Amino acid sequence: MYLFCAMKRFLLFGFHAFFIGFLTFPALAQEGELEEPVIVYDPLFWKSELRLKDSQCQSIQQINSEYYQLIESTARNSETSQPELQEIAKEGLAERSQKIWGTFHTNQKKRWVKMWSHQYGGL
Image (cartoon, rainbow, N blue to C red; front, side, top):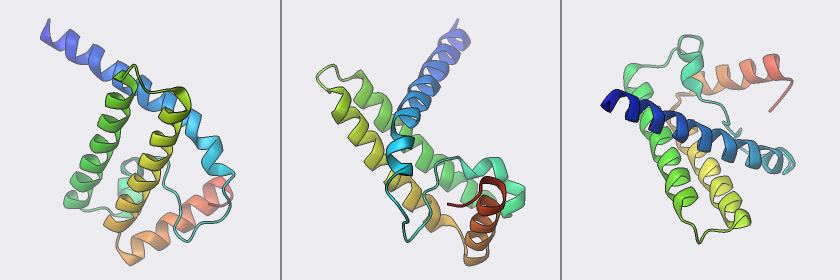
């Protein structure tokens, strides 16, 4: 029973995160060039390519968890309007991106930019 509840909570949480990301990504994509790349996707998917250390992975997991908790708590608040929710998610995503970027070493930053540019045609 507990496993089912935990799985249901995880899926609901993932849905909220996907939904908010889906709503905010077009807004971020239109903002133009930034000094630092916006890390929209989870770099843990490319752990081996980026040569992330276990400590970096743990930091990124913590950063992701904080972001998703922000989204979930904001989405649960019935007083939050859709535009407010989008703005909070957009600001949270930018903060998440900066924190993740800060966990990378110089060579990892170069790898991320090169990989992203090569696979997805730019930042």
